[in-house]
Amino acid sequence: MPSFDRPRRSALYLPASNPKAIAKARTLPADIIILDLEDAVAPDVKASARDAAIAAVREGGFGNREVVIRVNGRDTAWGADDLAAVAHSGADAILVPKVSGPADIDFYNAALKDAPENTALWAMIETCACVSQLDAIAARADSTRLSLFIMGVNDLAKEMRARLTAERTPFLPVLTLAVCAARAHNIAILDGVCNEFRDIDVFKAEADQGLLFGFDGKTLIHPDQIAPCNDVFSPSADELAWAHGLVAAFALPENAGKGAIRVDGKMAELLHLGQATRMIAVAAQIARNDRTDGIAS
Image (tube, rainbow, N blue to C red; front, side, top):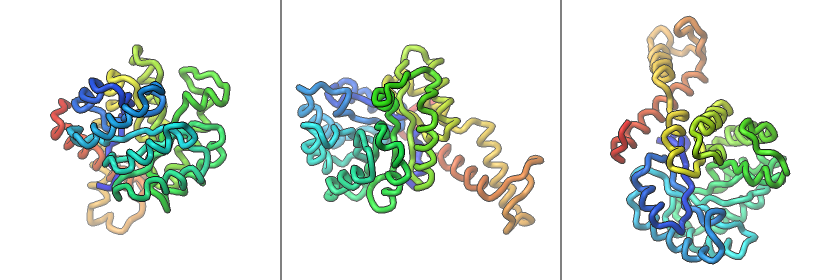
């Protein structure tokens, strides 16, 4: 299955300096585990956290989960050492923070030139400077390892001096632009974290908002957020019924070669067929992953 079509409903950040959290992550139903060397790690343990992240990746045991390492920025005291070390870690992706323009993507891509071919480059979208260049940044996916955006709304709020409310009103235009840029260049995109992990209703409302905007999934800061996140970003029974019905209708001999047909009283076009096919593929992969990883549905 193409990388773009794999389930990425939930991406849990974990401090790479916490061995118990990493061990627990191997049993959690998150689609992605992000071993963090940046925000979640104190300066005096950055180097040991880097070693721990690489060791965890090489040890494995994460099943079908994607394992990603988030490095410190290129302008920090740890950035260069992080990149040199994690390039050969075998992580599925290297997540880089505070990307402000296409030149940052080129820099990080060059730093990963000797990494395994299947190591992807993921970028945090969290600076004011990047907002006007989102399409140009996403366009680098055509010539680099870039394959996914992650929103960093907390950092964006800090730079903007904006209020981060439950509605996220000041950031809605940026969320829209980021999704459009990602889709224009066929890369995946994950919504930012919800800081409220004690009130699941608040979290679910924000996840629903992310789904409405077209995100593939959401980044998380607590294991309790995984189940409701997976629920929001998984195709529902009604959606799958629609998808299977539409695929079956287009497959009928009388509809061969047609660009638009009537299904259940509504017009459906080939673009809807593509959506339905992807939805079925993602749902099937979710089911396979759950069986393989021993996760109860």
